[in-house]
Figure (tube, rainbow, N blue to C red):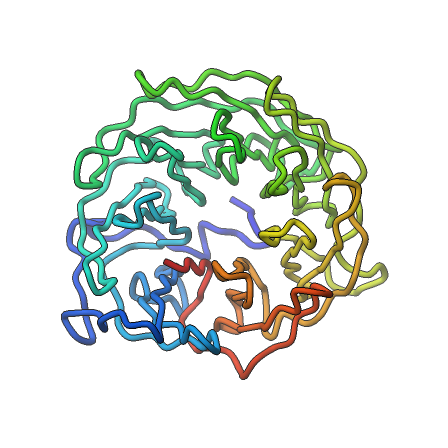
Amino acid sequence: MMRDGFDRRKFLGVLGGVVGGSAFMTHGAQASTYDVATRRVYLGCYTLGAGGGKGIGLADADAQTGALKVVSTLEGVVNPSFLTLAPNRRTVYAVNETTEGRVSAFAVDAGGGLRSLGSQSALGADPCHLAVHPTGRYVLTANYSSGSVAVHPIREGGALGPATDLVQHKGSGPDPDRQKGPHAHQVLTDPSGRWVHAVDLGTDSVYVYRLDLGTGKLQRHSQAKLKPGAGPRHIAFHPNGTAAYVANELDSTITVCAWDATTGKLTPGASLPTAPAGGSVRNYPAEVTVSSDGRFVYLSNRGHDSIAIFAVGGSGRALKPVATPSCGGAWPRHIVLTNDGRFLYVANERSPGVALFKVDRGTGGLTQVGGQLSTPRPVCVTPA
């Protein structure tokens, strides 16, 4: 199956062993204790294939400089390519991106360490993204190769129960390699918490669902169609709740959308290129994120190996290109702003390492601080 510009089945290999249940801490049985000078950061990676990691990385971030230091690894977790925290910050959830995909849960101890709470089937192949509903009652998972979205209830203590629902997308797109069928790439709720969005690269669509909190069932409400062949990958919302930005992996654009939380309607508008024209290497946008003040949008460019910076105008409904500085490595799959907005982390999958940038809150500009944190095939950075 082709994804991110490569054959993922050959690249990831096959699943071996038990996922999630046998995970254990190495390099010291206990993670370092929190203090006012450090903050915990969790690192997702690919473990299968050449140069793979051993599991979820646990790092400490200097609260003043943002610098990362890996202090331990939770081994035995297969392909934890995306991680997220529960709203109460007491549980970390991870996809296990394999042909027989699973979703794993981990309790967070007082020092920021992780303890396995087991896993559940994702009911699909190659789950690549997940999100916790704002109520803290369900985990939603996007299965890339299957083109489906699963719902799992969260039990007391953070463990997951068997899936309560699975919705299957249908359709295709014009790209002969990447759009032969549906490919759910991201799932998350809007700022109001009322609606669930599923971004599907294979059908050039963003699906909007209602989640029944009593039954854990999804009901499709609407479908927003992007330009044929765009290949939408991820979406991020403006803090004002009336605009959203879709990163399109296949045509290297970002689409500005109007969002109405009252009607549950997403309306695609203008699209802008994410990298300068004329490059000799095809570019694949990956992650998109918005500054907490809503003034800037950041997007990672794989191929061009840069971070596209856009200034936001028109109450969120307009973007203006600012710059495309180097990502500090190769193939920037995931980017994330720190909770205080002072730093941006970039997971450069093919360098491999995590680059750190200082954010100019006035101009939106990025300045790389130091070199990369060397860590095997990083694809997700999740600050606690």
